[in-house]
Image (cartoon, rainbow, N blue to C red; front, side):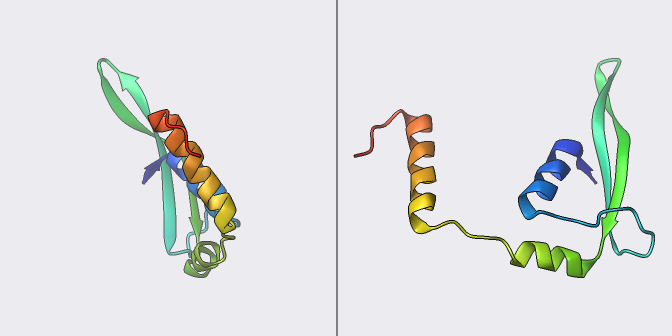
Length: 88
């Protein structure tokens, strides 16, 4: 059970495919959103999907990794944004 924005991020980040809901799949996702209701929030089912363990393993273990230079550049940029530091 997860919120839509979390689910969408996971699908995009891991390039998940074949997520149509199938009863026989063991991994099921129930996508909810929060809907205001008189000062409280209720869960509202938005969608349900499923996948196989092998599909998840493929997605999680076959992710491209950035080059060291690219990785360091991203980290430096995040540090600059967060701390306002100048890195030379």
